[in-house]
Image 1 (cartoon, rainbow, N blue to C red):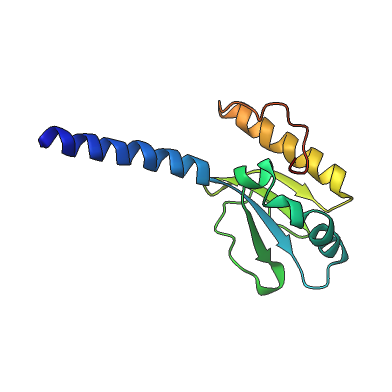
Image 2: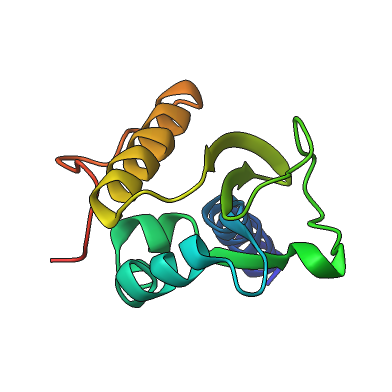
Length: 135
């Protein structure tokens, strides 16, 4: 019986650790109401983001800059422009994209940023990804 308890406890610790590391990465989108580039991102990228590999690796969390929300992330420097996308790992900024040009540029830069971070942390980069839409 004691052995079974230890197996269950150890399993919960291992699974909990795996879930924590999987959930530690997130993409924060700092935005303002009426921002034309935010609206373009919403139209051109958002529909595919959640279903994309990048979206699964770094779930999106929106930050309304006008409300002066606390992003609960240690930023390297303050955010001044919208949209700004901050890749955070375990509550710390590890990468940043300022502005939005077009979907192709966003996907490419985001994928590179995620892969660079995963390489630095010893997590294997996303195989065969050059950024982009689910497919």
